[in-house]
Every structure is written in structure tokens, then in C-alpha cells.
Image (tube, rainbow, N blue to C red; front, side, top):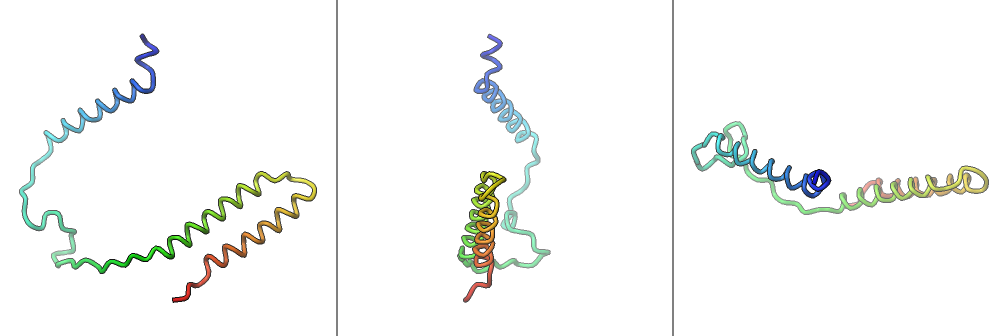
Length: 111
């Protein structure tokens, strides 16, 4: 019986039930605020905050994501190379190529 009660699924369900109970208890104790028109607006020192125009430009994000992917794959590749023999200079040449590709990805973007 003890193994069943201490199994991960049963313990997870017990913690979820306990967390939900704490949530309901705290919700009952929480102070109620009055609703008014600006309650959910961002605070801007008493000024009307105009939303900024939306610019959906993910180009720089994808370049950064590609750079991190290249660096992680380079670290994985170099870390699995043997330390002696022909592989050491080959790893340095590979890292130099990765360095060039990172410089290209980080370089100035033409607009």
C-alpha cells in the first residue's frame, strides 16, 4: 500500500489537489476590488497610454535563433571529437568555419 501511495502519479495528483485547495482558500480570502473603466489599463503616471504600433518583424529573432543553433551544434560536434591525432586540427578548422558563419549572422543587416 505504501508503494502505491508514494508512486509519482498518486503524489502528483495529491499535490495538484492540495494546490487547487490552497487556490480556492486564498481566492475566498482575497480582497474584492470595485470595477472601474481603467482598472485593467497599464499605469502611466496618470497619462493616457497610447498603444505602440504593432511591428511584426521576426527577421532578427530568426537570425539570433539560427546563430544559437549553429553554436550549440558546433559545441556538440567539437565535444565528441577525439582529443588526439588528426582530429584536433580538424576541430580547429571546423571552429574557424563556425566563427565565420556566426560573424555573417551577427553582421549588419541591410534594410
